Image 1 (cartoon, rainbow, N blue to C red):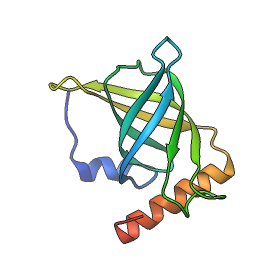
Image 2: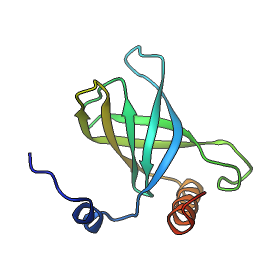
Image 3: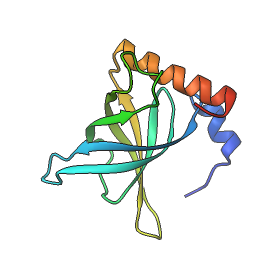
Length: 126
């Protein structure tokens, strides 16, 4: 599989991505219970998760993500995000990277994500 350079990938992305150090919770539908992923990056269109479980592309998820106070209306509550796994890549160390595209975000969630990404992209911090 041909690897593309970061600049080439950035040019084809619809939204800018920023690093994200946060945990994302998912209640597994196949008996996994509550699964926590580490988020690696996020954009208005999706996020990249580091996972110990492998999910197949096409799997849909409902995730909970907490952003720092000030980005979510009414204080520090978790954003509920629906998404679809669009890519799953298992690495030599055994972890899996899951690329998740957001589906049907409501306006308040989209606004919170946009605010977070813009601020971190411009200032380098949330």
